[in-house]
Amino acid sequence: FYAPDPFQRNLESGMHVPPEGNMFYGLVQDGNDFWDATFFCGSCAVIRREAVTGIGGFATETVTEDAHTALKMQRKGWGTAYLREPLAAGLSTERLILHIGQRVRWA
Image (cartoon, rainbow, N blue to C red):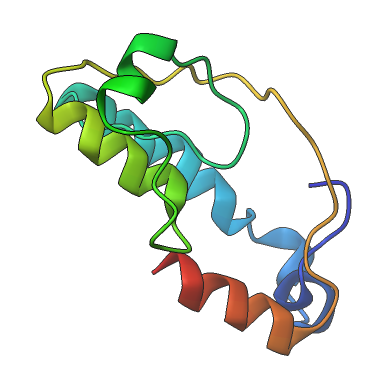
């Protein structure tokens, strides 16, 4: 993200602590990739049309459509892989309540 998140902005040591995304997009996704269980996050993905149509399209019954769609594809035998390279950039959440709400949705 271009902008610091609310924790980084408001805590005295915030700018000295790595962003939480580093843990997810480093350790967690690397671990998921090791077990062929990685999933795409948001719109940064290359997905075979055959895989998506084979599961009836993107999952829309949940707010975590990216993870849910990947799980459905994996159940049908499709493999997934994680490319540890930034493919998009953006702004972090501006207010703490928005930050927490986003993380609750992701959880």
